[in-house]
Each structure stands twice: as structure tokens, then as C-alpha cells.
Image (cartoon, one colour):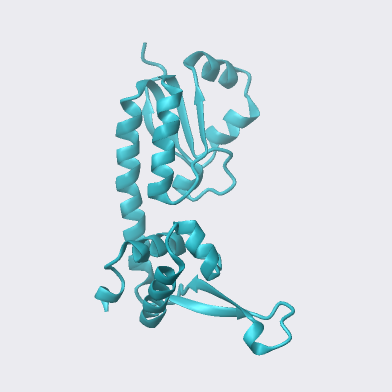
Length: 195
């Protein structure tokens, strides 16, 4: 059974997409574009995952006059017996990527404060996913973020501030900064009070 789950790059990309977005439904072309794989490869892997029971096909009538005109969507089956284990596996692989991201960001300059929020902590309402405070090469950070977006298969919204800007915004209780700091987060580096 497990050999039907793993074994191809397309399958792993589909697993990440479905397990990171369990409430969403996708149609085949949308999946093909999202994971940047050929449509035939996506169809083949959808069949494998559907056969195992991890994903299911749902049809939406919309305004289709005949049964064959119904749109077919795929979604993860959260009732699948191994769903929690697969979800945990994807989360653990994400933690390894996060650790790699932190190490690479630390090499880009002098980091005073580094925080993950938003996508990284399943907080869809957050206005940013990554807050970096310090003196950092922004162009190199943009390149790193673009690379990591491909690994996470997710857009990463990031905010960079100098220590002076952070302290000023914190002092005046800036709405954006206050919401980010008070929301769900993971603080990875906090050297703001160490001079």
C-alpha cells in the first residue's frame, strides 16, 4: 500500500498540496499548474492516491445540463485511516525545511529577530509569514524566499525591518507589528535586547 503513496516527485508534490490544504478542492488542470507538472503525470498520480483512499473525487453540478458535464474535483479524504500520519509526516518535513530556512537567513546578515507566523503556524489571518529584523541583504533574501516557496509549494510573505524601525514601530504600537507580535508565532532568534 505504501508503495502506492510514495515513489514519484509528482506524487509527493500532490501529497504536500492536498495535506497542506485539506479543506480545498482542486480540478486536474489547476493541480497541474500549481505543482508545475504535466497533466498526464498528475492524472496518473491522482488515480494512485484515489485507489489507496487518501484522496477522493467529488463532482459539482454547477449548471451542467448532463451528468457527464459535471466538473470533477479532488480533495483529501480526512476520514482516511492514515490521514493523521500523512499530515504529521508533511508537517515534520516542513519543520526540516523551516530549520534550513533559518540557517540560510542567518547567513545573509546580522539578524536581531526572526519570527515565523502565518503559513508556518497555520494562521491564515496573519499579514506576514516571516518577520526579519536586522541588517540583511534584501536581494539575497528575496532569492532565498523564492527558492523556499518552491520547496514549500506556498507563497511566503515576508517583512524586513531595521532594528531602529522595529523599535520605533513597537514603541508607537504600530497596528501591523502589534498584530504580528500578538498573534500565533514561533520566535527563532531574539537578540533585540542584546547589544
